[in-house]
Length: 286
Image (tube, rainbow, N blue to C red):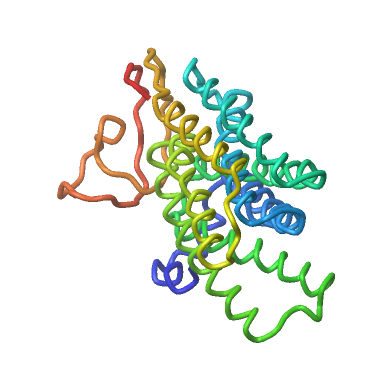
């Protein structure tokens, strides 16, 4: 992400985003950039890659529940059914993994809670672009995790492994996180995570194709239940009068009901700049 962040020529703007946004960024880095990946790797040592991939759907559950508890999100009947179904599917997978499965589930569940906090904090950050946010996450989070690797397993780093790790980092963390942040800032953390929830199913397919892992009957049942739960979560919408307070900030956006500020020329695509939202009270499905 460094070349793209450097191209924007605004890496140094981090000091201008304000104390609240800086704390949100620090929290996102700590939970999503450091704690989450470490817990994921510990979980991968205890269970198969395919089961871990499916357990990662708990990130959607964590994001939704944290939204209800701490971020003023709403979860209706369909949402709760989807949450219960996802948790049930995760428990089915623990049977597939045997006695060690419960410990692996706890580790992956903790990682998903960390990423759920990261999702909400990231969605609230403004003043820097998604690319810049990803750059700082990568710089601090990956440097810290690399230091952990050197400290605890210094002999495991070899040329091929290092190259493959960099390739995974570019796609699975750099490009992926930038696209996710862009979506989260425009449609919200919970909805973005619903779409992002398809990733674990790709993980199961890739573990079968490249790692030769067999898909068990337990996993098939869990996959069916997870798909039904995710569809139920996608159906979750509600509409009620709510108020957006006046605020001046900077983020990637396009012109809609929430962004009707004037321009010298009316841009037809997404763009980022400082702008002011007037206080508005309205009702729409969300």
